[in-house]
Amino acid sequence: MCRYGNTHYKNHYACFTCRKAFKRFQEDEWPETERPAMGETAPAPCPDCGRPMADMGLDFKAPKQREAEHWAVVEHLFRHGFAYHSCGCGGPGYRPSRWEDVPAFLAAYQSRSPGDLLASRFATRSSRREP
Image (tube, rainbow, N blue to C red; front, side):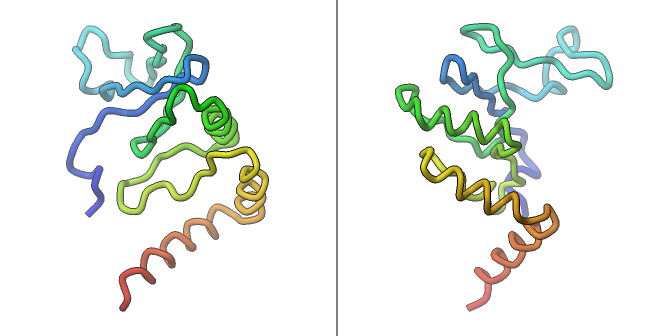
């Protein structure tokens, strides 16, 4: 059973300008008067600077605020489509935290199709269960 299937968790957002992460209730849990209209999404403004935050996924663990390089890497990966979304079973997978590891990481993912990536996750998961 997926960890996030039966319980509602707050969404994790990051402000790359302030180098801070925040959790926010899902829009369907907001008071009726504050919910966006059907089919629209409400922007997640940073409580500190007011700029839009990035939806990082439930598995995101923010680096410490003083770790500027790690924050820069997280932002770069997010801009290239790598966040921390998963169903909670195996996590989103490895994400580098240093610039020197980013080129190899991106090269490994760009050379494979989305179907190949999904198949490798299932193969890895099933091989862990066998003795």
